[in-house]
Image (tube, rainbow, N blue to C red; front, side, top):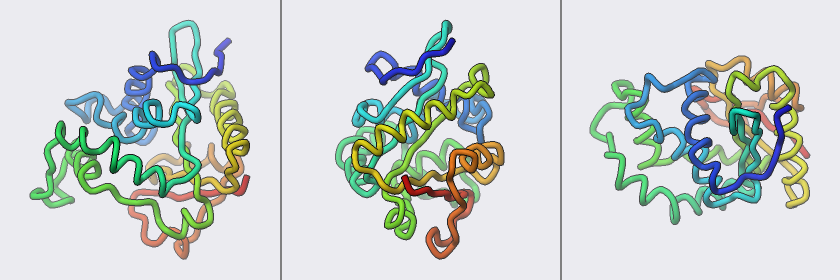
Length: 206
């Protein structure tokens, strides 16, 4: 049976791999990126390196196949990334600012985010200041691992004083939206999120 445990430094490469293998609205994004670490630089690796205390993994006989991570304070996390994470990433990934957004490849779009990160909407953060990310490889999906990882993270977040939590789900991932709804998240109105092309914002009080 898969086991849930706290993140360890040796799990970092697994975070990169899982993020890529689930990075196309829940599907394998390997074909979209020439650099297999690019997605993980945004959505997975910085949490393992900078916030391991709120990072947990699911491991089976084949290795780590899922993770959950996040931050109790989204605005503080954005500032931490600006100080301690994005500078090194910007040195590795060229800024595609000269390319119109509609003409950018998926890889260029991610690089653009690294150079000019979009902060979470103020209305969302004011009501639900914490955020989380979770990804699971297909071999562990459908067996309750997602819910187990979520409950593990929520308990740790509650112990850290978190009272409100949000997630941003790809609009092209209805399965992800349904999963978070089953975990108690509710869709957030545009009054909180503002225009949110490509992202379906959900939140819950914990």
